[in-house]
Amino acid sequence: MNQYITIVVAIAENNAIGKNNQLLWHLPKDLKHFKDITSGGTVIMGRKTFDSVGKPLPKRRNIIITRQDITIEGCEVVKSLDDALALCAAEPEVFIVGGAEIYKLSLPKVNRIYLTVVHHSFDADTFFPELNPEEWKTIEREDFGTDEKHLYPYSFITLERA
Image (cartoon, rainbow, N blue to C red; front, side, top):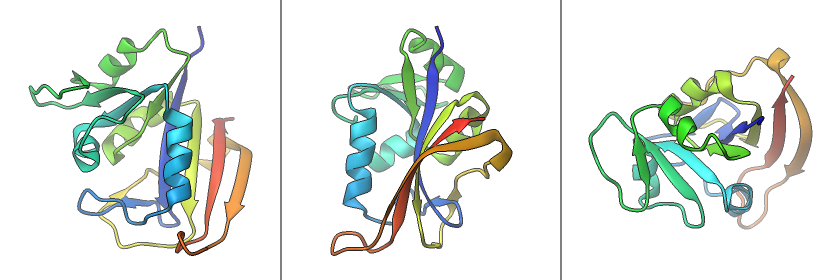
C-alpha cells in the first residue's frame, strides 16, 4: 500500500513558523483549513508542538514524539518518527504537524505538503526547512488578501514530490 506522509504547515515568507513556542499570526481561515485537512486522520507532532497546543487535537489520532518517558492522556507517545509511522502504517495518509525538528526529520519521507504561506516576514526563533524547488511541484494554489479577521495576505498551496 502506498501511504501518503503529508506535512501540514504555515510558514512566513522567511520560513518562520514560531517564536517562544507560539504561532506568529492568527488566521482563522488557516485554522479551519488545518482542521478540514486533518480531521478524522492521524496527526504526528513533537512534544513542544503538543505543549503549545495544550491538549490532544479533537477528532484526530494524536501521536507525540518525545525522548522523555512520559504519558499524555488521549495521545500515543513514541520515541522516534519511525516508531510513529510504524503505528499508522495501515493508514492511507498521516499528517506531520510540527515542529521544526519533526518537519526536518520527516521531509525526506514526505510525498505531499499542505503549505500555507503568510506573505509577511516575522521575527522568529523557529523555521521550516528550505524546500528544494526541483523536488516539489505545485498541484493547487489559492490566494487570499487581508480582511477584518486576517491581517496578512496568505496562500494555500498543495505541493507533491516531483
